[in-house]
Picture 1: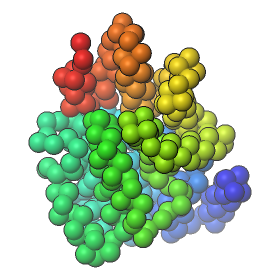
Picture 2: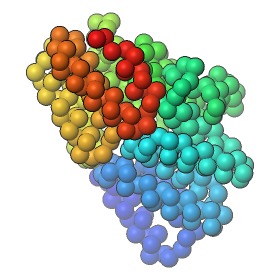
Picture 3: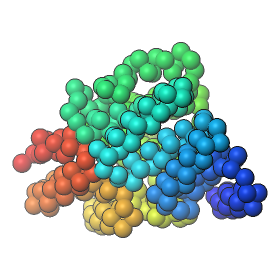
Length: 329
């Protein structure tokens, strides 16, 4: 019940304001803005509330919720396309604060975001592996498994899945996506990261369906599409560009070339309108791949150029270099 959840979220904020107390600000803001707000309002409009809740939590001694709010502000800033070098500075600062206040679990959940940022900025030994300055992928996964920190396992696997898709390793992306589904932990697609992950799953499943011709991937892609379509009906500002991109990929899979081309354009336009630079870069890239497969090298070259420039604008130099190095012409 998305509408009901949004109503109760707004009610919680009004009640908090009427009580004129700051003791519960950090906890209430975290619940509302992490799980409800994105269903009806733009992701980016939650960044300042998260930061406000962080500051209030630090003042009132609610350190745990303060740090989780900081973590959420970093995630949303990343998804909304804040320049990655600035992001790296912000995340590193919060990691230091979390270490100082001995908030190890929250710090561990922020490490995968720090490493994905570093990988996208580059260079790294393997851009698809979360191993580098911030963390060691194997060690952190082993730690999470040993201590049954399933939310941490989910966070790590989610970022690995995204990276593998972005760098074109569709089989490995699918493997990690499927392994993640085996974790005995389920947020029921309530958080922003879970909803964005459904978007990536849809893209991965379309790619695998096209490559393997297996019907199971097409069914999974259709399920992701159904979810994104539902969310877009309530918050088009967050999900229209995602919906159009999956529809473009699905239409291409079904042989509907004209519809696919129009949907790529719609995704690019919506991502630009709603300021999702990373996803606009991705839509440009997917359109380039589409036109290349259609034998239209001129259009493919133009879209690759736009993708390259958009990734550079975001600060994802490693991804921009990946496009340049793998151009087929």
